[in-house]
Amino acid sequence: MRRPERTSHEEARVAETLKKGSRVTGAARDKLAADLKKKYDSGASIRALAEETGRSYGFVHRMLSESGVTLRGRGGATRGKKAAG
Image (cartoon, rainbow, N blue to C red):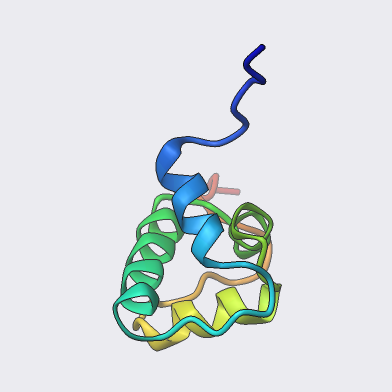
């Protein structure tokens, strides 16, 4: 009996190399930073990324900062223009 998969193969592989508290260095760190940057730029929140990877909010925040991402303000992604009023 096969149990349903909760994540894609890619996410499972990334999560496997990122056991909570394990040190992430070298190429694995670069790959993780690139993946986090891409997802964050697509609108994912730091909290969502932290939960997805099994890492802390602070870890994800630091990885994004190190990779040169311009962090959004509090309140999430804002889309479009404000209504004139």
